Length: 447
Image (cartoon, rainbow, N blue to C red):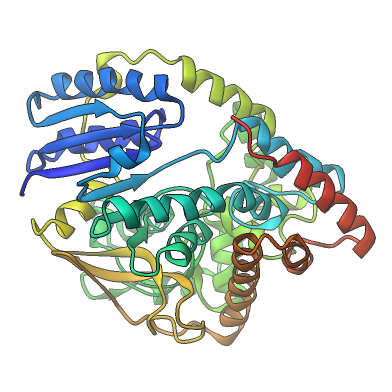
């Protein structure tokens, strides 16, 4: 692969930035310059040392010149690839996203994509993305941009809103969990070792975190047919409250068993293709109470844990064994290699709708499969899901469009319209407005 100049915006982060650098070390075809930019300049400089440690641990010294740059324009200048992984505001901003709605009886299992919390996180994040897009237009207009930041759909849409000719995509790993789930099913059904998730071929449709599988195959075998047959067993969707309580006690906030994904297949005819924690937030009937959510084995991630994790990440000292690279489920580096002409792949991507999702307007950011090759992404037309799924996804996409337009135009009245239209909103209008105003105040961007 040719020498590549990569800028990680959010280069002081202790999650995505570290994993991306480990993947760079593992993929020996990659080399060039890695620029770390973060508004927390000290954090970015600290990650230069971590990058050198990663390269040393993985016998990859000399492949990348790693530098921290304090000025965004300078960091972007001459870049072939821009990776965006930022936290919009302090972690304390999530108090407004998560705790305030809960005080009004609105529960959210994640609160970073949809619901009142997702809308307010977008209000913090999107102005940053409008600005990033303008900087990219000025300093590296031909660069490919991979966004990891949530709300994925809206942040990616903001890049295109501010710079329509940008070459950007949103990269999300939630679909991979569904492929892994189906791979385990393959092992059970066909008495074979669990195949690599990449052997599970799926047809994908929807918007990020609210995506659906309409077809799935392994070596020519129809997996959806077998999964639908399994739904005849009442134990497949048995009450998992005991499992949820165990997860609460063990703080296993992210564990799930695809029970909500399977319930969509049972009731609407398509398998949910994101984690249950995300899927639950896009419709009104899973988060009516913790007790109801727990029947699916799902628990909510608390604000207190978010705070403690943020502190732990900031203070973490990496040991060599923490930084040893192996084949990961993340695809950012693989996508980069394809765009730089090293190989071709098919995977799920978040991109403007060119017709690949027939039931949503063109231009909306949608998630479906695409072919990624040298300087090219070609979306694959998805099969239409059942009409009920189309209706659910369409409502979500419409609320996202209102949110994007409101934030771009600085129109908080339109933002309140989106807030009221969200499927989780169940409050009387005046009470909803009271919550909205409190959340506006709490979501002010501070670092």
